Image (cartoon, rainbow, N blue to C red; front, side, top):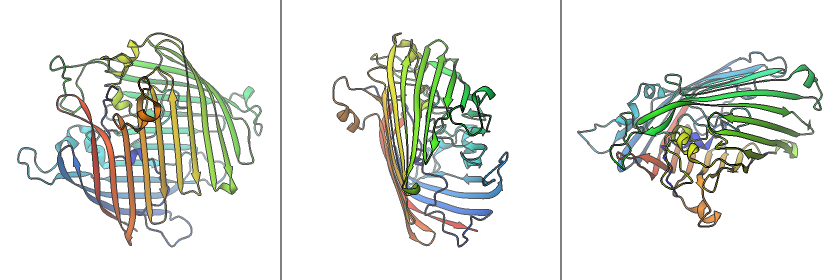
Length: 472
C-alpha cells in the first residue's frame, strides 16, 4: 500500500467532541440558566515526544463567552453566544540543544503560525439562522458533502491556518462560505440554496423543495513537486513539499433536496447532486438522510445512504478530511504514480464507475456519540473508513478515532487491511477530574510526519499531563 503523505495535528480536532458539552476544564455553575457572560482561564502541561525528541507541552488558554441576540431569528429562543477562544501552544525541548534552542522552531515558521493564538472565534451554531466561525475548522461540509466532506484546515503539527466558515439559513434561501486560510487562501468554497415559490409551501412537506448551486476551487493545486534528486522530494522552508508547478482547479455542482417527511421525531430528506470537475469529469450523487428520535430523545439516530455514478476521472469528496495534505501527495491505483491529487486523478482511466457512501451516527443519553462512515467508489485502492466514539461524563471524557484512507483488498481481506495500522490514523484521548478545577489528561496517537528527505512515515505520539480551569 502506498504510504499517504500527511502531517496531522493534535488529535483533539478529529475527536470532534461537542463544543457545548461540559468537560473537566469547565466547572459547574450554581445558576440554573447559563450565564450571560463567562470567562474561562485554563491551561495544560504535559510531556510527550515528537520524532525522537522529548518536549514539554505548555498551553495557556483564555475563553470568553457572551450571550447575544440571534440575528435574523424570528421564532423560538432568539439568543445565542459569541465565543472567543485564545491559546499560546508552546513546545519546549526537554534536552538542551544549542543548535535548535528550547522552543520548537517548526511551530513558528510562517506568518499564519503566529495566528495560532486564535483557536476559535465563533458566533451562533448550526441551529441559528447565522453561524460564523474563524480559526480551526472541521469537520466541514459544503451542502450534502459530495464535494467538500469532513474537511479540516489545520491538520499539521507544523502549520496553522486561520480559516473561515459561515452559514446563512433562512426559510426561503441560504448560503455557505468556506475559506481555508484568510491570510493566504487557496481553497475557496461557495454554496447558495433557495426554495422557489413554485416548489415551496409553508407547512407542507410534500411541496418543500430546495435548489442549490456550489462552486469549489483550489487556486494553487499542485501538479508537480520539486525534487533534490531522482528519488527525494524537496522540502521547502515552510516544512511542506516544495511545489514546482501548480494550477487552479474548479468543481461546480447543482443539487435538489426534498425536505420530506418530518413528524413524530422522524425526518426523511432525499437529495440529488450533479457535480462537474473541469478537466476530470462528472458525478451523479443520489441519496437520503434519515433521522429518528427514540425514547423521548434518549437515543437520536441519523443515517445517510448514497449511490454514486461517476464518469471520466471524477473523484467524489475531492476535498477530503486531509485535503491540505493529499493535495500534495495522494496514493495512486497505479504503482509509482503517487503524487499531487490533481495529477493522480488525471492518471486514472476514464471510465464509468459505480460507488456508494454510507454513514451512521447515534447519540445516547446526550453523553455518548458514535459515528461511522464508509465510501467505495474510485477504484481498488480508494475506499476509506472513519470511526469515532466519544463520551462526556460529569467527571471524565474519553474519545477514540480511526481513519483509514486508500483501503485496498486486492491481496488480502478487508479485515486484515483495517487492522493494519500502516497508513491509518488511530488516536485515543482521556481526561478525568482530579480535584476541583484540576484534571489529568492523556493522548496516544499514530500520525504521519514529514522527514527531511521529503518522505512521510508513520510515527506514534503520546502526551500525558494535567490541566486546570477557572471560571469567573
